[in-house]
Image (cartoon, rainbow, N blue to C red):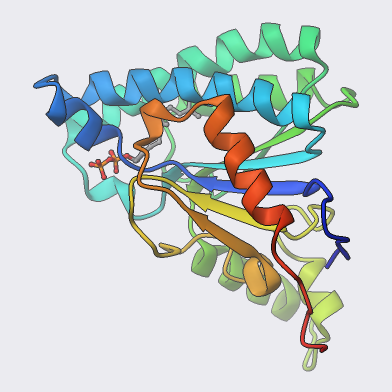
Length: 232
Ligand code: FPP
């Protein structure tokens, strides 16, 4: 838990990127067009976060629940991820971005895993912003993954610190700010442990329309919040 003075920039911003499908529907386009436009919004947001001095950006790219979508949509999203990871690996070296991934590997396609592993290794030494891609991510899965790791260690009693040490990325600071686009106001199995003291920012803007200006609006809203962490 980091301690924030008013007017500070959050170290870690996490985003539930929602509304790609509705964006496409409004334009009578296939859903994939919404995801493609969403990928452009990802690039804009990365730049905005770097410019603002954010250190960690977690993006909810694919949830453990998204596998129930039609197979052609899943295939399209996986292909887009592969292409983006490819392009991103080149840019990341230039932009000094480090890639982390949070989620379960199974049943991600081999092609995605290959590009993902390559991107993580190729950017591991970068010292700028850390992009943590929540991919095949579910918070309940992360929590049970941690519990199973602790059981495997033979623990019969644990502290919050022991638990933190078994999360996908123990060194990831808690997000001070969680943004969700498209007007939905729920967490959808995202960072349940880490969100204990997060501030929430909801906007009706659909993810493909998300811009640097919208990102900065969320940061400004965060700066007006008083964070007491249970104190007075
Ligand atoms: C939610 O919109 C978005 C997703 C399920 C996936 C997020 C994916 C992207 C932004 C595309 C590319 C990402 C990366 C990291 C390259 P939705 O389909 O649930 O929209 P809807 O609720 O309007 O149907």
